Amino acid sequence: MPILHPDERLLVATHNPGKAREIRDLLGPYVGSVITSGELGLAEPEETGRTFEENAVLKARSASAESGMVALADDSGLSVSALNGDPGIYSARWAGPEKDFTRAMEKIHRLLGDCEDRSASFICVLALAWPDGPVRTFEGRVNGTIVWPPCGEKGFGYDPVFVPDGYSRTFAEMEPADKHRISHRAKAFEKLLAVLSAPAS
Ligand code: IMP
Image (cartoon, rainbow, N blue to C red; front, side, top):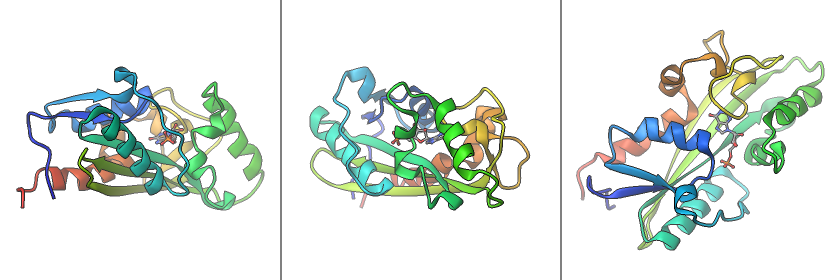
């Protein structure tokens, strides 16, 4: 399996600035330079997959084919147990075209009603695609609890209503460096970096 050459520029297939910021923080020390498909003005493919993995592969393949670069995509979302895993792969879509996450968080709160089970997980699947074909995927997950009302101003998306297990603050109340130590994205990146830093075979 090929590995990324240290001089090679990595394309991150996202138009989401919150995600791009976290990925830059996580990859910064390991990759020469990072550019996003949003910055390059590449098309945003329709997410037609039925799983995080299918969507991550679809986005990485599309960005890599369009640019001729090695491309990394992240498909991620919040899975709420009592809502049968929703919003799941529809996490971004629940916020609508205006990307209104206050509305999306309120929807979770409304649907949960007085249900006692508040357990949820953030899931992240990373896909790394080379223009000549191979794709590798890496999954990370963090379990936690949905809280109400939303708390904190840091982070993005559903961070204000998610308290990771073992902590008393939401992701949005944590310093980014603290979230990066435990998040679903950080766990997926640990697996990815193990591959990027392995000797070529
Ligand atoms: P997609 O992977 O582009 O389909 O979008 C994933 C969506 O899941 C984001 O827009 C956020 O709403 C949500 N999400 C994924 N990761 C996080 C996170 O770390 N914090 C908060 N929300 C997240």
